[in-house]
Length: 177
Image (cartoon, rainbow, N blue to C red; front, side):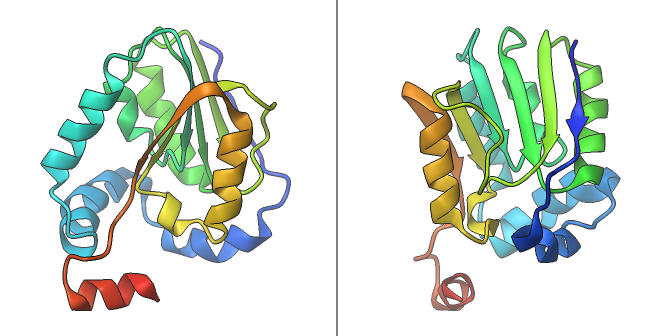
């Protein structure tokens, strides 16, 4: 297994976000599943992962980029015949992802500390890009989407999950900020 964590060039626009993700990586997944998704995103965590699993489990032998991979929580839904690249701005979360990946049987894995707004990959490289509840946290999400478009192969897919408005007025006011 080829695993690496590369240090970023400089991620200045995202530095302030690192404070939000300076949570202990051991409790990060618990925090996301039990507090963030149900209480902040107003989402059903179990249903979220059921939908994600149904979209990911049939993908085989592809180049996959996981933007905002955090601790690598989605790798359990991916076939190990895929080449997996995880990208996140948090080095501590990537270290946790590395532990999770070491217990899997992926043949090709890369973990990269970097920004979705400036993806360090060739054009037309990935078959699938996954952004699991991260897009809304990227300061220049439009630039990130342009970067995804650049690195996706023709006919490639973006699989994205993010909070939506329309749940209730209080929720909408918070996310519209």
